[in-house]
Image 1 (cartoon, rainbow, N blue to C red):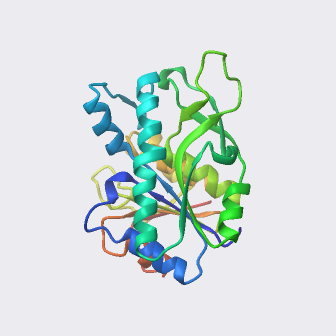
Image 2 (tube, rainbow, N blue to C red):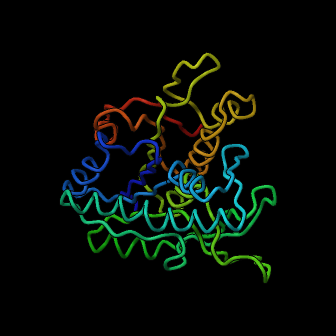
Image 3 (tube, rainbow, N blue to C red):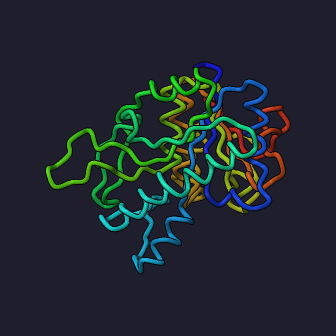
Length: 261
């Protein structure tokens, strides 16, 4: 699994002109071993709005009550996952969509009452990913997980998981070669918004502590730091740029590289 590249796709980066799916198919055809982890935050918010369910975030993570959990599970493991898998397969790739519940891939516990039914990953069982990779497929992972630890009797068996944090845990568990975040900003910026091309883990954590990195960038940085602990190379790049993923893997990428120091 040392040659696996984990790619986290934010929902905001996928659109009609996006080249990420093309890049995934091209990389697979080059015999690169990829695991794709996807979000769906904007789509979840859209469907919550249709159901007239309010949505709220704390430090970049969605607060999840029972009604929100049902919508998030349906959107992530259903619509968002299958649309992405269909797009890859339609372009000639070989992809299989799963979620963290399948094969007990992502085993979680509730750790923050403020967030509600949101899971913290305690264990990653990489066997389902390894089986799919060895069979020549790209696993496409939706980030809801199995409530396997400390579950009160009335609590749901499925929990929502922040997609960025899940990607970091998957990359760490696989001992992956790299973890690439495709997002809708240029990378990590300083106080004035200027792109920071390289950051040590400690410098990145300081940006969170100082309030410079905020919102959805917080879990991305945390995920990078987690993956770096097991030797995974990490970066955060602008997925809206044409062939950003290919360019990054070919060593021509931009964005922010976060490294262990």
